[in-house]
Length: 143
Image (cartoon, rainbow, N blue to C red):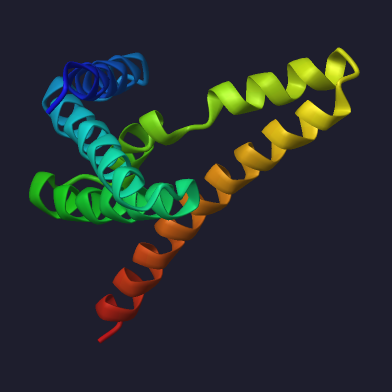
C-alpha cells in the first residue's frame, strides 16, 4: 500500500470522525461511524483502481457503506442514519461542486458543465447505492 493511499484512508477516518462529533453523535457511535467512512473510501479506491470508473467505484462504496450502516444499526441498537450519514462523508463531491459553481460564476460554461456532470455522477451513484441496499433491507424485513 502506498503512502498516499494510507494518508487518504486516515484522512477519510479523521474527517468522518470530525463530522460525527460535530453532528453530536455519541463518541462510541462516532468511532464506528468513522470506520464506515474509512471503509467506504477504501472500497472506492479499490474499485476505482480496478475499473477506472468513477460511477461504479462510488456506487460500490455507497452500497458497502449502507450495508455496513445497516449492520451497525442492529449491533449498536441505533438508527442506520447515524452511521450512513458519516460513512458517506468521504464520498460527497464537494470539490467538483465547488468547481462547477466557480466556473459558472466566472462564465466558463464548458468547465462548469464538466464539473456539474462529475457532481451528478457522484450524487447518482451515492443515492443509487443507498436506495439499492435500503430496498433489499425493506424487502427482507417484510417477510
